[in-house]
Amino acid sequence: MRRGVILCGPAAVGKSTVADELFRRDERFVRLPERAAGGFAPGELDALRASGRVVVELRGEAVVDRRDMDAVADAGEVPVARLVEVVDLQRLKFAVPFFGWTSVLLWAPREVCGLRAQRRGDADARVVLGVWDETRRELLGLEDPVFNLVVHTDRVDPGEAARRVAEAVEAGPAQPVSVVGDVG
Image 1 (tube, rainbow, N blue to C red):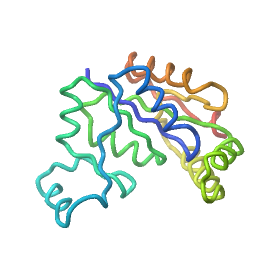
Image 2 (image 1 turned 60 degrees about the vertical axis):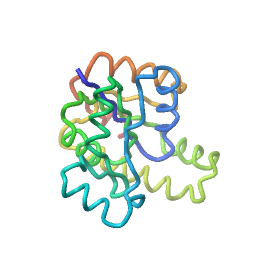
Image 3 (image 1 turned 135 degrees about the horizontal axis):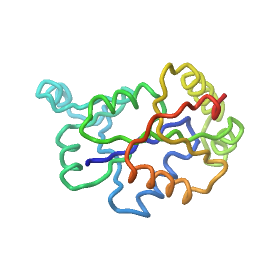
């Protein structure tokens, strides 16, 4: 079975850190092959869309090419997507159903994300806190659960978080769980 993992959560929660740890621990894990929407030559993106090669557009900023996803699948690799918005998670799962996606919510308290944003030198930590607030509202408003696993990045180190994610991916997508108790 083809497998993939989607790490979702607000800014400064640790998506890149956990993804990097997955890449370090197991070479099967690779970045979701995406290209910046602004990185195409004039007309190139329209041509890809017309040919049916655009699998999905994420955040209006990134494009996933069908050939790239086929190459990942053929190599037996596990793509790792890092997303903030649940709508992009749902869009990716719908657009690429031939992967058994394990959806992981990475979560940490608002204050922790704010401190992390400051430590990493974000120009405006208030923007990060605004994204955290928006993400929390989105999660509390979900009608149906979409995550297979929740990892609190303020409670475990990146290695342990990556271990839990890898185990969940290996087991295959589990029944989605409610996150209300985690973010409420």
